[in-house]
Amino acid sequence: KENHVTKILQQLKDKGYTRPKQIKIIEAYLYLGILIQKQTNERPQIHELLQTSQCSRKTQNI
Image (tube, rainbow, N blue to C red):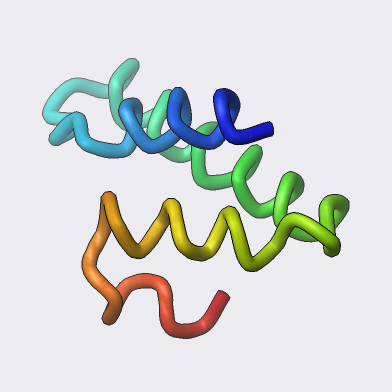
């Protein structure tokens, strides 16, 4: 699962100036939300990966 999360986080680093990139970013957020909901036992690890790649302000509600 860690590999999936790192791939998603790489997609989220893209700025998304074009519509296809914006769609991929939205899909990445959707898949990340599904992954967090289904993998309750791995939630702290996912949260830690998110905090290292994003800022803590963006991840405090997870």
